[in-house]
Image (cartoon, rainbow, N blue to C red; front, top):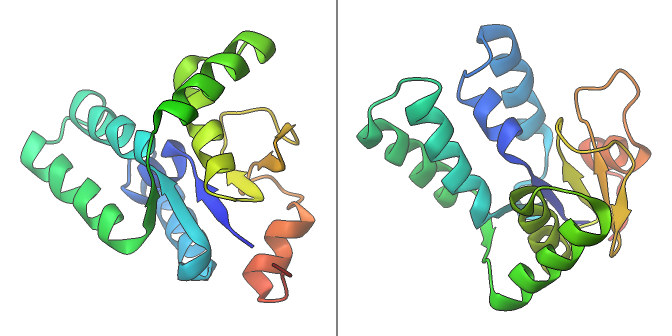
Length: 152
């Protein structure tokens, strides 16, 4: 089973929301099977922007961070098909276009889960379910993936 990470998971792992949340996010990422994790390219752009504008990092350090994430996990490109599906998704479900691009890319990558604290818990589109990995009650697919018992 494949899973995609939203920008907020990456940002927390980079320490944007404090040391406690950084440790929680890093523990989550470390528990996920590396081969199961995909990153929509959009998340890297958003992370760079967030690290520079909100966290005050120098652009060179933000670039280094996104290169590390790129090297750690496979990427899902933002193709024309992904963008057009995102426009439909944004129109039909009142999502921001950038959230829709991430969800659309996640579906294109064949993921079952999108780990996000920002999108609606349980929202499912094209076989992808959004779940908050920091919620007290974990989605059963995420629990199985972390435990190593997930089916493909």
